[in-house]
Length: 131
Ligand code: DCM
Image (tube, rainbow, N blue to C red; front, top):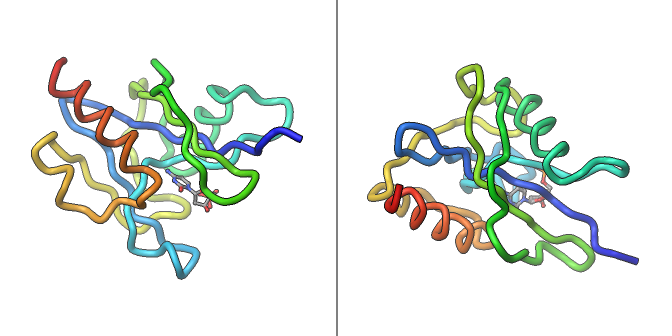
């Protein structure tokens, strides 16, 4: 059986990266992540990401490029990440998060990212610096 997938977005706007602080479960609460969630059967990764960002942040967003690689979360579950452009709306922490921050490349080390998100954050920041 193939792995289940969690999709997440490196949402970039105005040269900054969006970081979201988890409010649950207790073992992850307070850590920061790229927002996203589980890909459901019948959805593409991009479709799942658009849905998750609408539900969690209240925005319309467009996945741009997949960040190469995937990162294990637990047996049978992997994380995949896309860079994302905002189309409409201002992100707010509607579900699963209690704080959002827009970070410049120099600020991205100021929050405690989930370990599994760190490689994709580093790559997103590298791309932000180049842009
Ligand atoms: N997850 C993660 N990194 C992300 C998003 C999610 O490691 N950027 C993990 C946390 C949960 C699982 O994926 O173990 C499912 O996420 P959620 O609870 O947000 O659906």
